[in-house]
Amino acid sequence: MKTFGQMNRDELILLKSRLEKEYEDIQKQGLVLNMARGKPDWNQVSLSMKMLDTLNSSQDYSDCKEYFNYGILDGIDEAKTLFSEILNVSTDNIIVYGNSSLNIMFDQISRAFTHGYMGNKPWGQLEKVKFLCPVPGYDRHFAITEYFHIEMIPIPFDNDGPNMDVVQQYVESDESVKGIWCVPQYSNPTGITYSDKTVERFANLNPAAKDFRIFWDNAYILHHLYNDKQDCVGDILSACEKAGHPDIVFEFCSTSKVSFPGAGVAAMATSINNKNDILKHMNIQGIGFDKLNQLRHVQYYKDINGLKLHMQKHAELLRPKFELVLDILKKELGGLDIAKWTQPLGGYFIAFDGLDGCAKQIVKKCKEAGAILTAAGAPFPYGNDPRDSHIRIAPSYPEIEELRQAAYLFTLCVKLVSIDKYLEK
Ligand code: PLP
Image 1 (tube, rainbow, N blue to C red):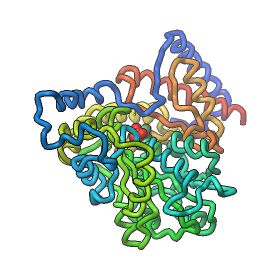
Image 2: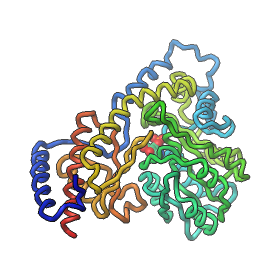
Image 3: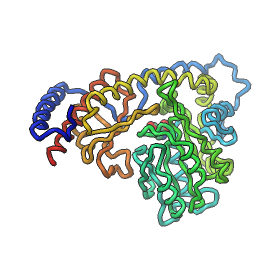
Image 4: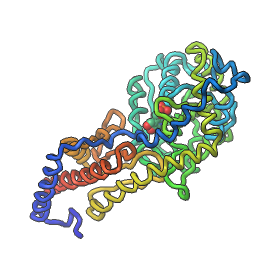
């Protein structure tokens, strides 16, 4: 088989007319497909449906009456224990919140602007605040920093995490660099897990800013696709503590893609100093989160082993979807030398890279035939993919037949747009 680069003009034109005909036939079907957002499907959320039967009026709650009242700002002990097992840290370092980890991240940045961290000057009084953004990354992280007018600096990825030489250079030389976004395990969207060396280098940073913080969003810590091949990112909190920088990290996670997105429980792990500082502010912000939902989650999953078993059921539903998309990509695009993509062991995404200058056009062409993809550029600060080559594929939500159609249509669009690119040359 020839690569597109090896085909002559006539061969490319002939192939294009055959593919265009196929594209038009698909367009006529009026499909409505969506591979845009990384949401669990109905079968996945249904796995937790019985959680709704845990708390009920026939249970005896006499030993936890206070869970039904105001208070217990940092979460009920049982939930702290569950998150301490997930994150492998002491319960003393945990705060259990409401339903969303993204909301905690937003609050952390918001507080930095209004009040500052641990006595440091509020960021709102500074001329410039910058954040490092490993790319491609999570669009909603970048949306938060953009919302606060924080200047975002893209950081390239290596195979084992962000390029730490570049990170170190910025963090240690520029006092206006106040944070970095990280999704350290099964990263959104690359699927990369940071190596132990990367974790060590993060922990050993000597930031120019006293209030620099690593935003360690461990959203996919439980989300393995396979039982026998699993990544496990190192524990950042103990690494930072060992390196003598216990306060430089906030670690986040939630059960959004374990139980119910929007109705799960979220938590943060951080140093005792940070925790005390945060609680002072939280004490003004509210009188406690939804402790009954925390209890419901603990009663249902029980402990880390219960969670692991539950996540295997998620994996059984997700794995065939990932494998289907990967098979179609390989069968349709393999050997053409017009694209590469990741083969993640977990998380929610396949990261796809086409030829430079093609991503926007591919997404547009898919949309015109009925398949919605994440907007090209979304995984980059300001929506700007400098090479216009990256597309995030989210296989979890569509049903399997829809996914088959969407993935095939995607490959057809990739071929058509890539042929045009070659013909332009
Ligand atoms: N962090 C990452 C990296 C995500 O991919 C997502 C959801 O896709 C979230 C956070 C959202 O988490 P939550 O539902 O806890 O706000």
